[in-house]
Amino acid sequence: MRLTHIKLAGFKSFVDPTTIPVPGQRVGVVGPNGCGKSNVIDAVRWVLGESRARELRGESMQDVIFSGSATRKAVSRASVELIFDNSLGKAAGQWSQYAEISVKRVLTRSGESSYHINNLHVRRRDITDIFLGTGLGARAYAIIEQGMISRIIEARPEELRVFLEEAAGISKYKERRRETELR
Ligand code: ATP
Ligand code: MG
Figure 1: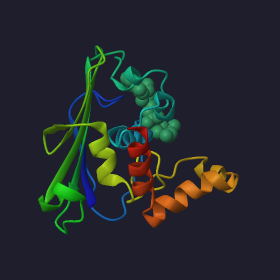
Figure 2: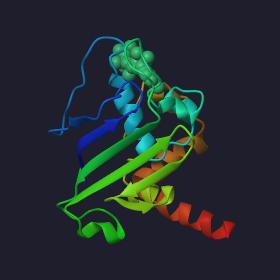
Figure 3: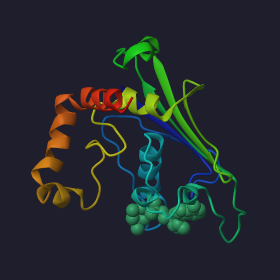
Figure 4: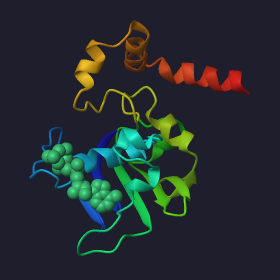
């Protein structure tokens, strides 16, 4: 699966509907300080199911919704959609048959939250499921942020093991076991 487009609306500084194409294997995002580069990465992690506002540089989850600027009023809804090329059919389970997969998250100021895959209403878990074992989870190693390298170097062995298990594809089964034990 390869990310081809990021579509944002009402998310952080991206108040108007914006489509960001990801045209190749290597893409650079450049721009002056404060123009919204990190917000794009926050958007990707948000769709993948990030549940801690602090990880997205906010205090509450509603902080991802455009809160207004000198010239624009605040909006009441944020949505981010990631479009993946799945022409190789690598997506897990029932989704493998689709050539393109859209993964979307929506949040309103009143606190209504929803997740969608190919416009079907799904649970947050269904989103994390697609990406478990691919390294592309909200807190997996596909996104390496400022400070993360030193966090990994200084990590305790049991924290490091989480990364190794994700790379080895075991985390998916551990998550399944955890869920079974909770039932
Ligand atoms: P730097 O080069 O300094 O890392 P950057 O390009 O990564 O900058 P971001 O951190 O992505 O910049 O964007 C910061 C901007 O996003 C700030 O101007 C901030 O006001 C704006 N912003 C963040 N959240 C919201 C929100 N909820 N509503 C409106 N604007 C927001
Ligand atoms: Mg930044």
